[in-house]
Amino acid sequence: MAIIRERLLPFTFVGNLFMVPDDPLGRNGPTLDEFLKKPVRAQGSSKAQHPSMAFTEHGHQQQGREEEEKGGGGIRKTRETERLRRQLLEVFWGQDHKVDFILQREPYCRDINQLSEALLSLNF
Image 1 (cartoon, rainbow, N blue to C red):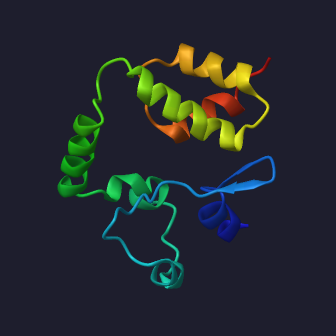
Image 2: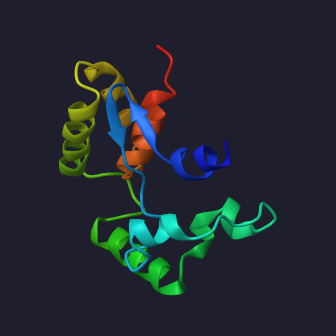
């Protein structure tokens, strides 16, 4: 049960599609084989419970730089909203109304994963 909880739960299924999560260990993190060979950490370890805490300052700086390049902080531009809409409809095809609703409800969100999560939690 621990293997399932710690190694499979970060992944998401959307319908019949398998969605890979963001890499919490960053670009310079271990390969999948190296990561899976590591011993399981004890429950008391904060990093085992929150792998995103393992980011380095460099990772935070690079993420901030990427957000600046995409125009982070303000309301999305029309072009970016259209791009996000196309990407969401590739996964949530036939759900145009829900996708449009979420994009209107979350005008500042640029993260496709957060928007997908909002769509999955939406009850129409």
